[in-house]
Image (cartoon, helix red, strand yellow):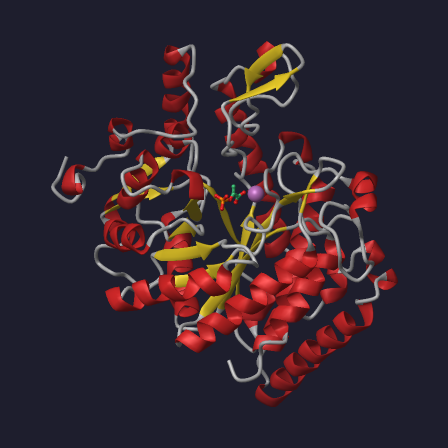
Length: 451
Ligand code: PEP
Ligand code: CO
């Protein structure tokens, strides 16, 4: 292996020498290794040039010249790899981005939490029901949700099924986008059935009209069409939690002299695996992808300083995105110090606000929920705190679906705890439904003046 290939002792499996949280052991190690070998032979899901293109776009977001919209399910499921579910998710992300573009007057970088978001961190290793205790469900890439010993046993074959489902999803998304589905001249493609019944419909259609008129005006003035608007980029991201899977698709690209995780454009490190000495940090430091790092209220400035150095030693713009998820109640207290830590280190980062994961609570029914008012409050605070500190809020990270679920409360229809049972479909965390997501997009768009 050349010196550049084995930089500072790193190789795609060097994480195995560290404590690896959240990665269950396979009973049949031999089978797990055979699956990894097969995954390593299969073609990559994304290419290094797409990954590099995303890094360049993220660098712009870091300077406040673009805005990242990252969104999708908390956890994808194999069962939801269906055309209608994929189209609906793409539609809501496209609708939100047109609203944000028109408000912020900045390009939007779209990153789906999709085509690979199959591994979930859990707070406990086991789940007990009555007298029976079984391993926790950890996402469709690891085991199955049904509460039986066979279903909960980690099964290496599921890595192959996850790879295939990711490829199917990505193939469909790419075809839709290449076929003109995302053309801003035809936003009527994206109307979801219930748009016309939504209290937000009028505001949305007005914004779309403004963007369309602007395009027509530009094109008639210059005699050129805006190809970049016609064909939008769409990137994928997932939590890079199950390192055996990520490792298997990690390749050295000679032309770029770097290792790439080619399961996705934008993998991120979750809060539960972000300790500076963790296996996950070790794996992520060696890949060339732009990466995300979730920052929680317990991330200390000292830990953050170390992570900035380990994960981006050359201080490359666009390489590192800090996704803060602090909670509406704590963001104003905690974020200023984190921003100060980054600016004192002179580090280039992209700041993204995840207003979901710090605002989860349990309703009286026992269902996990989030209040839209808290989500919006955290987002508004993020804009304010960054502005006051002279840094840029470069994007937002949301759990959402284009479907009409009732998992978060609040919003234009005033959903309450008693509405939750009606349309509660998530396997893990509560997602914004279509209208709630649009409401968040409209709030973001409202930050266009003076940014
Ligand atoms: C998630 O993004 O679904 C998640 C588990 O987030 P966090 O690591 O921030 O808790
Ligand atoms: Co989640």
